[in-house]
Image 1 (tube, rainbow, N blue to C red):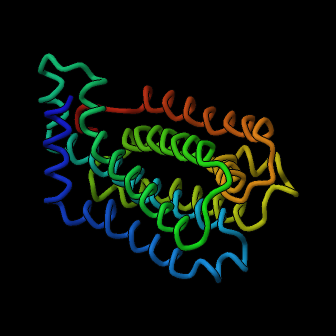
Image 2: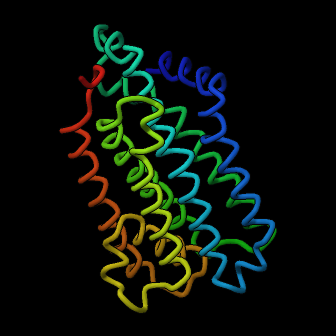
Length: 239
């Protein structure tokens, strides 16, 4: 797994498109939110900033890069060649996706750390970390599922749009308006409960036991995404 991960990391830094989507855009977006944190704090809250930064990184940086990478490796038959070796399917996918996941986690941690320094620390760091990990797992599963319906890296620009726009829209909606109204709908939509978790973790004022139940919808989406990935993911080019 580690040799595959090392090679994939090298490929990320050689591919300009992947480099922009996985590194440049998330950092630029995070810098904008942190730089304008006082404005966004007046409009919504610091938790809103944290949630939007997190979801921008895990949708643009993690989700779209996952789909693009897997589609490219399938198209050039790299997946097929790897599968002909003694390496198991799980190790192959883990090796290909490990650098993407690590980069996304480092970006989220770095941007939120800067936000904490300039604007104030989160109320519950442990809950915040758990919320980030749950969101990463959800978007990684959705990335595997979407890759199964993506023919090429160019096609990924189309297939990733519905999930990317949908999740970011839900995060912005829940982050700005909370869950005082339409709570069940907002929590069941992909990204809704994870956004509320980040709001609770950063802003405080919510009992931990009340926040724990919010993990259920996000983990349910992980299960759904993995099930879809198992049915749709292809190791060879689609015909």
